[in-house]
Length: 576
Image (cartoon, rainbow, N blue to C red; front, top):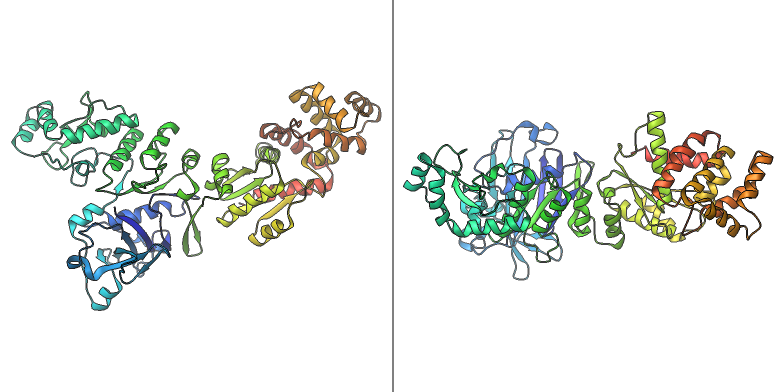
């Protein structure tokens, strides 16, 4: 089965230069918008598509510089015997070294034989498709793929409009399911004149096997078709290529299916036809699909398969899609100067963990990796306070995302921050300071360029809140703690952390008598508030309330060192 082993793009739209060796299975391109993901799919489609001409414009050239030609070069492996023919393509055969990922000028017995197709467009805007090899270039040889081979290699573009593939047109996937072909003869002409149902009986007999396949695939994917029929599509007014279309059991043309249903059915048919057409392209794979049907589509494309039934190139902005895929199927597209790079996310445990808990991070520009839910909630609450009360721009609007490292140790947070930084994201790590991180990990953090945000030495978030906030703010914190977990539990935590020497009632009486919370009381409340299993505010939603309704409104009167850390948090989040 043909596979793209290397893709090279020069001067095409937003891409000045890209060199990428994709995987043999699913290649899900992710990253910020307008970063070239769809351009990569278009490049593959234009280079390998079975078309004799394409309309290009000056805007297709990088930076509108038409003097530098567009070059899209694709090297293919997994070739059929016909494509490996020495008589036909011998001078153009090259080698793909799977061990190094390199394309070599000459084929060898111990590496895969490959063919390279190049699309070139110059200032005259006329496209040229040619095979390429070093020795052919030296000899001045030129030739392209035979049309039947171009048609066989053409990728299936599963887009928003599936009518091309839901009728028996020239490049339809239906023609690749079986060897059956409809005869556009007298019966078809008569049916076009008289009644499409009359021809339905004729076409159904000729295309029985294909219709059975369509019915089976549709049923398996939950697309409401019933028994598929081949009938004349009234939309096709002439008896020509594409006049025979798929219809539902009730006679409705399947081209009228909803966008999601059409894409889902197309994906299933493409997989069924994988022996004949092995490359598929899907832009914004989630478009038109509910989460459960998106998962089914990904399954149909081989997301969970180990034998790579298709080589798929897709883009997504859906966390649902990311959760369904592994890190080995995700590729992050970034523009670095005038060069685009495509980095695999990888399958490290930290990557897989973030994919399951915070997949949105992979779709962001900047990431705040937090030690636990407390830090996530506080940051979100402060962000909400700034947006709603001070008309600031939200961290989310700037392309930011939060990652919850789980709250067990600061090292786990820093390890996740380093992993995401190596993938090219702007990363800040936010940890408590009551437990010291591993020194070597701190050095790695600095080398990788991860910004570290933490509290003063020896303090956790709860310590900072009760030591540094105003007395009025502490009143609000205590009141909210009682509201959340109950007065009895709050009192029990205070007794426990004071070894039975202090009570909630005594602290309240002290506050009423003195008008302030003494430092010793503040420190005790900080310790009591962070009881490990039943902390007063240990959740994202609780700390979001604390940040939004208590810390934000009272920050200006808080202790200066605490204010400095909060201001750094805000500045880092809003430098995206």
